Figure (cartoon, rainbow, N blue to C red):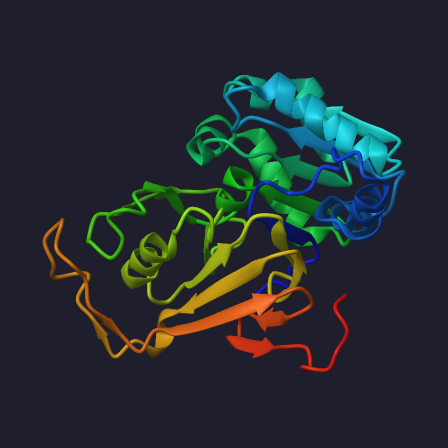
Length: 287
């Protein structure tokens, strides 16, 4: 299997964009916020960052928010690439930006828009190729932008019908990291049940539930480090001893026994291939 050289940064949504007026808050945003880590991984403030707000229903406003946030971090080369159709993904200007960027940042919104308008296009092929082959190339995504990184992508589902078969809707994502199923806004929107069903459907995959203002830096397609202010919940279905998802009718309560769940926070690490957690010692300072 080919060693992945690029970096993925899926984010759980609602990441700090430095809009508070409080000076201490602003300093924290600049020194250790999620977008600070995105910029650092991309090579620093002179990195070429391209924001793609395709998932959003208000792409212009979302693009402006990111331009302002990255400007506060001192970034000198940030462009918004507003893709609204598959045809836009084949335009020379768009292809040129994606070929030369150090970092691509996908916004939140509706993840299906990303796969419908970018999936299978020249831009998608360039992203996948650069991610596999270029060290230092970063693809970051928040909320929908994070969920679209998977192959088996959560497209929707009701938290109120959690643990009922059919509560989650799956769709094909960009397949940048096919080992994972990613869900976002995980704690605030109570998505434990729909991620459980997703892992029951695909027990060979690892479920990742990202809280808001929380993300993971994934190196080499394997080594994950948690960043941000919240938690990452990891679902490992490899240990399931009972899983009746395949035999149930839609709308029926599910049974799963011995699913392994990990709760990780800032600085903790996860090895995808070996399904192993490395946590900071209890006495370690918060980083």
